[in-house]
Image (cartoon, rainbow, N blue to C red; front, side, top):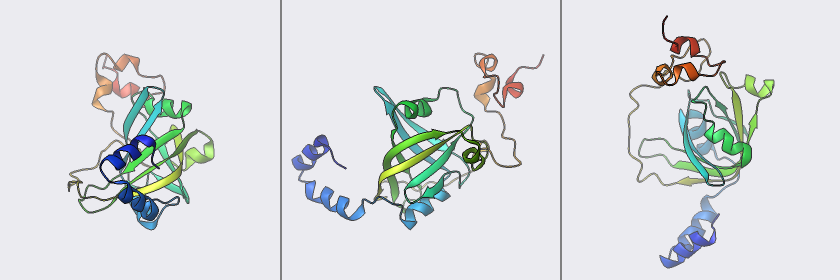
Length: 200
């Protein structure tokens, strides 16, 4: 869990004993019930990915339940229509190691971070489990670690995003797809291409 840079700073600030105690008592390799509740109720999470110097941190959102716990330490989430840059998926396709952060902005719940390997899936059975998915990311956690919420602010949800796919719902086109430098560049299969095209 700790590399030599982390250890050096732990030793400089006399924190190694605390770090070791937290690792012994809090690090785990399968999801705890509290982890599962946080994950399955989440409408968003953050994922860090990399390939060489291409380091990225991304927000992933959907309706609660869009991240599914499919094994003792395995998650799946859908990749929805996006901006065609494929920063996270491109990194995963070259370097499987990712870090995830699940956080509830209530000022009281532990946040949960985890490290592991991700793979990209496009088989029909997996896609069928995730409405609106273009690709599904499966994540196998090496370890899971809950953190104290003391610096997490309490924020109120004013309204959920209208954009995540849901059965029987046609999400609106995002405003950026109608910009003059993008609308004619949208992929042929983009679900908002007609909507975003200017009227004749």
